[in-house]
Image (cartoon, each protein chain N blue to C red):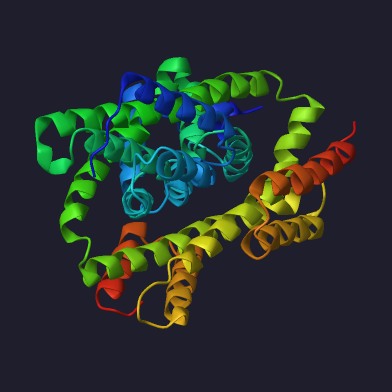
Length: 196
Length: 199
């Protein structure tokens, strides 16, 4: 077999962070773009641009980050950092997510004390909030094609997506119950489907 | 507002956030109601306005949403130091409060995540681990879209009609979905429309 003409890249050839410092800088830059939440930016930067994660890996990792306690994006950063550089990477990624944004938010809090009453400032915050909602919804919509290869089948998955959406957005059922009941059903069902 | 904080109070604050950290399934935002009970109703360390502005500023600012926790600690410290106008002592106590709440909310959950995900990675070929990860995929997608929906509709407070906000969110969703335009342009456009009074 002619190795030179085999285009399929091995797992080790995938783009990956160069060093813990690279992780720190990337996470800082990511966090500073994330108005109203960082998740949409994580998908855009780490999956679509840097390709440190495939869409499938992003979905799986995010599910784990979501179910464990703690902020999702922090958990996600910790997992990515740990995978590449162990504890050092995990600390670098989490520190990157928090350090500079923390300084920025303190400055904003002090400024806010002066301009809280200004209607333009309040309006700008509202407009950014509306856009931030759209960013997060689009992050979910872009992942839907990944469900085509799901063991439960595409149609079943779409029903599950719709059930979760309705339970949270309309019925306002506490998240713990939704995860426990709908998530439990989905995992058990998948477990039966992937029987060897 | 000025309050008195003894070292037992700082310790109680720290213990409360350590506990909330382990309860914050799917993000610290789900523990906001309990933080309100603890900080505002029970101990009166923060006013209602300080509490809500801590959440609102963190939502609008860049960075993970969990930073609202830092602002709560910061405000408790400022109150203990006699308010932001009281000078250096207030700022130092503010930083102390910030450190206490942030370390409290981060330490237990990150430690747990670190060890749990290592275990999961070592056992990734197990049927149970695979079923969990794959089974949660549609749930996660539904949650993302629902979070976007709640955020989009949750901040209507201006004079413009509510459908303006929904339109803005809908257009933003479509643009992010179908194009690769940089997200900061969209946020800037949202801020501009808001400042001009469209939403």
